[in-house]
Amino acid sequence: MKTRYILSAILISVGQLVFGQNLSSAYFLDGYAYGHEMNPAKDYDRDAYFSFPFFCNLNISMRGNVALTDFLYKGPSGSLVTALHPSISATEFFDNLHANNKILGDLRYDIVGVGFHARKAYHTITIGMRSNVGFNIPYDLFEVTKQIENKNYSFDNLGITATSWVETSYGYSRDINEAIRVGGKFKFLVGLGYARLKMDNVNLNLSNENEWTATVNASAEVGIKNFSWGALEEKEYKTTGVKYQQINLDNIDVESPGVNGYGAAIDLGAEWDLEKQGWVDGLKVGIAVLDFGFIKWRNVAQAQNSGEPFTYQFEDLRVKDSEGASLDEQLDEISDRLSNLISLRDAGTTSKAKMLGATLNISAEYKMPFYRQLKAGLLSTTCIQGKYTWNEERIALAVSPIKWLEMSGNVSFGTTGVGLGWVLNIHPRGFNLFAGMDYSVYKMSKQYIPMNSNSNFSFGINFPLGKSRVDYSRK
Image 1 (cartoon, rainbow, N blue to C red):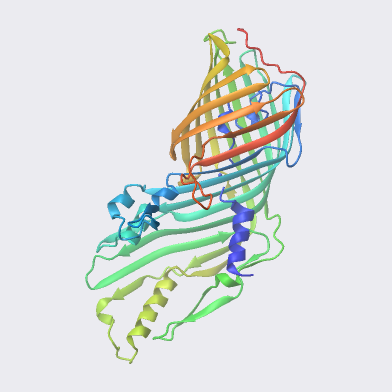
Image 2 (cartoon, rainbow, N blue to C red):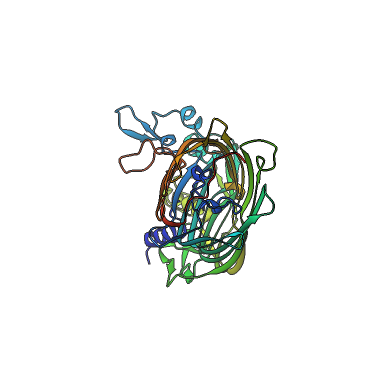
């Protein structure tokens, strides 16, 4: 199977270029059926709800602290050019970059969902698919590419990670007393695919006038069922005749991908209504920890580079060397040695347990005393994923002019910049349609790629049972 097909399969089945994010803009809506996915202690304003495949909760999002506009510029003739074009100064390009430049993506698709009240508690059952992908590119790599100088460069954390799994969950929440409500959710996870490529300890010593050296630790892991690196490619240095083997990406193959791991995770949450406590009218606070768990992956194919340093001495390059090698052959030798610096070798297979990216949500909402159907809310979200960790604070206004119609507008700011979100939730008796965006898209390229890396869309249809339980009167 050719490389382009393999890479396409990995991106589609393992990532979608979209860590399982929820529609944060809907957090403060009482009639949003999937509030339990952001805090398992959340109640639902109807007796029950159910949903079917193709009409369930779909959320696709991408976020990052760099955007397409940071790499594409208007050139002298008016056409778009890349940041490497001579007309774009290094200062102009570098001013838009960060120490670690991230692009993160999520896909959440709930295939089947049911929620119902029974025995003074709220129960939920959901089957869905989750995928995430993350890229991290350190600043120094762009500096070397755009403006190489005679100095030392050293960086880590260059990499990409992607995971895809199916989860089945059962949630339970109930009131502890009149003011405090708690909830929890257990998730059984079925791993579909996992991949990671990273480069660490990258050191480029270019300060010596007579000699340049480079070292790097490159590694890859692919946990996809029936994945194989394929036959190794045998290489030979043209001038020395030294032979070595490396992975040939054109030989990579996947036959009958399927389940390749199992795991478990939990969600825990609580809400405290300070109005019912008799302390502050209209105020409720909440906290939740989501996706605290792991997947144990089987048959993870590993690859590692040799780790051998590359050394180039300027005095060694001659029109012809002592063995009669031409200048072209010597340049080919240097090219081969540079290629060998990061070329991956098969390192066998293993089993690995990988933690999911846990999320912490902290919320506060306040019902306006002059109009109880209007609420102000603050939601702080932190997703803990190592080098791909991100945080955002979201300030929202939510209004429900009639019980079956809810709307919210909000602004967020954090790791990936500022965004504007909205949601519309229509839920008359027996039917619920919602749509929203945590990051609105204002400008797209001709290829329909968002010019800003923060974009999100969520949509779903479900079927609520019973009348709304929301009471806007004072307690």
